[in-house]
Image (cartoon, rainbow, N blue to C red; front, side, top):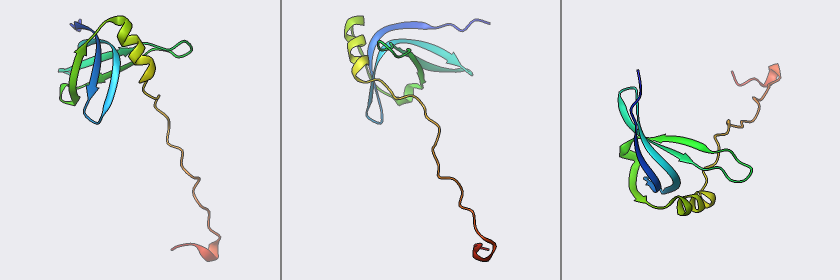
Length: 99
């Protein structure tokens, strides 16, 4: 089964939550729902990033040229996902256990 997509093009994508991304946007169907797929170009030493957003998360889409989108993407690149860094659990001596 193929997944039909529509090419929207190079854009500045503004999301609720005050995020602005730039890249090439297409639409994709995932689990029966329509999403926007943004492919954000990589910087000189960084790989490209792909993210998916539901239509309700979009505040504005501004069509632009590839040159402008690439320049904007270099200035507003999302940070990669990191795992949570938690303090190690505290160990108790038997006489000071909290229970």
